[in-house]
Image 1 (cartoon, one colour):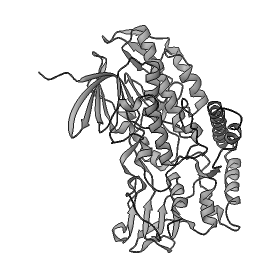
Image 2 (image 1 turned 60 degrees about the vertical axis):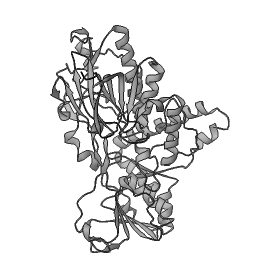
Image 3 (image 1 turned 90 degrees about the horizontal axis):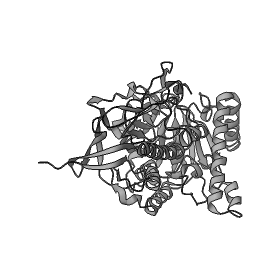
Image 4 (image 1 turned 180 degrees about the vertical axis):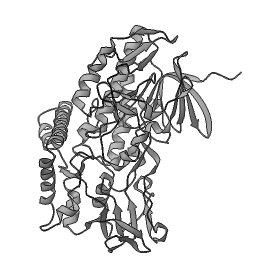
Length: 500
């Protein structure tokens, strides 16, 4: 007779920022619960252990990308990948989270049984298939595919005689010394790569179809520097964290309300950092409004310094075809290159590609609606961590970890086995999950869950709002339903609460 699968109270999928943060909250508030973190790769860190391209760094300030419960105590505003990875390793080691990680455990699917009030999780490890069961399943695997990035079909690609590299699959020890490099793209990855490569490359060209909004941040936050002289690390961290949250909010909200003014502000700051006579209108003035796509940041204007020094250049044009020597543009110009880097984006993949079933029926993502940006309507005992598009990822991921701990505490106090958000308000209308023009979003929007027109189904993209409703709001809010394993409804607040 086959042995029953191992059962754990909680399974966390992914050992990156979100997974390590969620595990911390679980250990702090539910020390008696059994749990494991299933990580498909051989090390923790997620994004920060996967990406190896030159200059890999945060594009959010570290006071908000760092955990709320563990201050980032280095002076840099934007940190490089190795420093962030060290921070994650140290955080996991401090509270014993690292001992809970099971590496080389790729989750393929999960099936929920209402009769048993548990998930049966299919896992591949060491080339073998195993099963685990859990009462609560938490996906902390981000929203893009780890095994491949996005690269458009480029005509003539096979003709090019040099190296073509996607940053997500950067070759170890790749030597570009003295080489002519063309970086295709204008997003965060491209504007990170260009200044990082100029010291070794002969020249680096950023080839873009259209510009992106770019802002400079000081390498060291002046407020943090001043406060560290008079205050301990923890209060300094909290003050700077809230200062940056406020700045992000103000920038985003003013951009939405007065896009023309903010466009002038951003473009004006860029122009000040470029040589006189530089064609800012062509190369650094986007065709969209600020925050229609994510704002890119550079530390201490390093991209503009590389351009002023003549080590880097920007070309705004379209690709006609790759040639043996480089790239032929539709304008007729040919960019000669030894290395072409396709910093052309990511492929979205929710929940690491996990296939979900509820009582034998597959969960069809576009037919679901997100609850508080962290659960799915009609899917019991399942949550996910996804960050903000207009602020740091960790701000929302931290709140998600806190909320799940609160939710579990409520269930334990009242003897519930099952929690599930259910849409009972007929006035809630479906809307796209993300109001964002970025290519990686638009390519996948049809495959994503929906959001609703009202709270708690609406994705607010506001940390202060989420702080109030997720950290301090009622768990039993009338939308979240609680049941026992027998399937009998035990508690429900009035449905009118959905309209809050």
